[in-house]
Each structure stands twice: as C-alpha cells, then as structure tokens.
Amino acid sequence: MTAAVVLASASAIRRTLLEQAGLTVTVRPAGVDEDAVKAAMRAEGETAEATATALAQLKAERVSARAPDDLVVGADQILVCDERWFDKPRDRAEAAEHLRHLRGRAHTLATAVVVARGGRRLWHNVATPKLTMRGFSDAALEAHLDAMGQAVTTTVGGYMVEGPGITLFSRIEGDHFAVLGLPLLPLLGFLRQHGALPN
Image 1: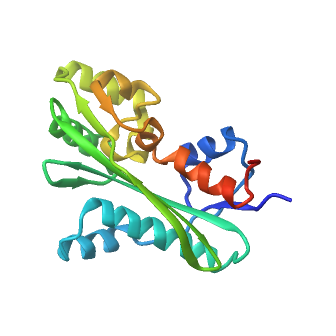
Image 2: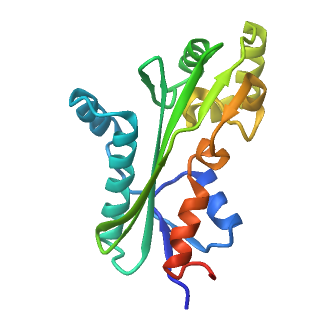
Image 3: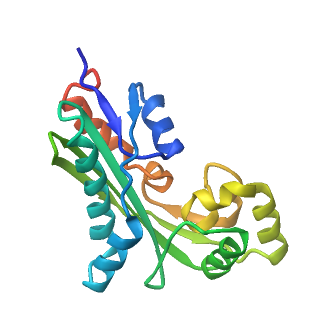
C-alpha cells in the first residue's frame, strides 16, 4: 500500500504537477498568515529562501498535525527583484506596476518545498531559478494583462510561464518545475523513498 500524500496548498498548478507524476493527492490548504510571517522574517533580516522554507514548513506541519500518518507537502515561493519581495498582485493595476518593475530585469524565485509527517519536518528543498524579462512594450503589457484576466491575481509577479506569460521572457535559468512553484524532481525522489511512488 502506498503512502498517502496531502498537499497543504490550494495551488492548482502544484496539484496538477503531482497528479501528472502519478500521485493521488488530497488537498488541505493550511490557512497560514503569510504576510505576517514574511514581515517578521524580513524584519529579522532573513533571506527570501529562508522565509519561503519557513512558510512551507509551517503549512506542512500545521496540516500534518491533523493527518499524522500522511506525508504532507508544503510549498512556498517568493519573487525577488532588486532586493524587493513581490506578493501576488491584488488587482490588474498592481499587476501592471509589478510587471513594469520586472520589465528588462532579472529576478529570482525562491521556491521551497517541505514534507512533514506526524507534525514535524522530515525533508526540505529550495530552488532559486533566475528569470529575465525582455524589454517589452506597454502594448505587450496590456495584451498580457488582457490574456491573463482575473488569473493575474493568482500568481506572484502577475505572469504564468505555462501560459501567455512566457512571451514576456528572454531567458529562464534553473529548474522549470521550481518556476511553476514546486522543485518536483527532488520531491519525487523523497516521496519514492517513503513509499508514495514505486521505486
């Protein structure tokens, strides 16, 4: 019998990535106050990588405490450009402001994943892919926002590289799956070792 896997996230793309890899996933969002954690860790001088890991761990451990026998996957991603941390835009106008800031620059995505069981962390991984946006026109920006519609508020940076956002980039370096929000290959390796996938 394979180990049960729980995703402590409401992210549709993370669920899809796990299911496409052959896992049966139960989704139980953790309900963490991410803004408060980010503000506290930023005030303490912590890095984006450490903060993303702490958030992923908090999510995984919180859900794991309610499902102690399951392998619970928590994940988080923070976009960093010029030392500024970006959250999901609240509306189209804020998405446009974010994209104007990112335009023509490189940014990183601190992408962390944690697996917990019995309320404690068993394993974690952090990836930091680097993405470079091209110097696109205002017309291209508006066309992108039109194509994204309301989905622009569901993703950090206001883009999806698995969709129309790919046209905004000139270069992407690092783990493709981490760009999407989950360092998938190392995670699958860990889950395979713990009976969630055939070895």
